[in-house]
Length: 319
Image (cartoon, rainbow, N blue to C red):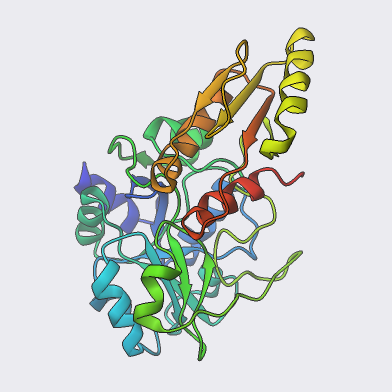
């Protein structure tokens, strides 16, 4: 199956494959037509760039015009793994991959199927999450099938993903690195390698993003997702009962609050890593159950929760 998938990619086709974070929709990153198929399949705006997956540090170096020492430090510490680095690209990377910017996002995924596919294909793979744009990222092959269907030439099934949310994106272009998209690897792990991190510049509207995952609305289930604080719990519980009495299907994710009884509650892990691992899969399940609204208890404010907070806040942003 890996050989067949590699041949499809070399011919300009699309292959969905598992990584340790979420499933990716892969295309030959050096083939403009193939990359444009990715954008079309996802309904992805052209100002939202793609991450390029490579087999190792050497392959990453061949795609950029500069490779600072701290890029090597990050690669040695976290590749293969859920960290993406942004560096200035070489001209062989088409502008369609990078939303016209002069930088490319690169990572080496930590999944045996993804690595085997990269080695067999022998090309870098532009691979955003394998779902329609702004929707929930897939953590199983079945999620990919439901979201993209026949838009994909082949889906490689590697079972549920282990990390459950997308990689950390680290911008290494400037004098001070910055995290453009939070993931399970955070500032605590990265600053000893690259020094103090700067805050990323905000981007809005249709300005090209330096990284995926920076759209205002993203990672959203079909159901309306609403966040609430512990101080609002009694009001939300009462509102939920009213909605249910009207025939509205309501789901609820709780971490620390007590189960009020009589509601459709999903108890989420109280640690940040476990919560992230289960988040998308749980939201997919509630969508599949026909929920119209999903109320989600806000997660704690600690730095280890930054990635989960980011995903939930973007998912709750109105259309």
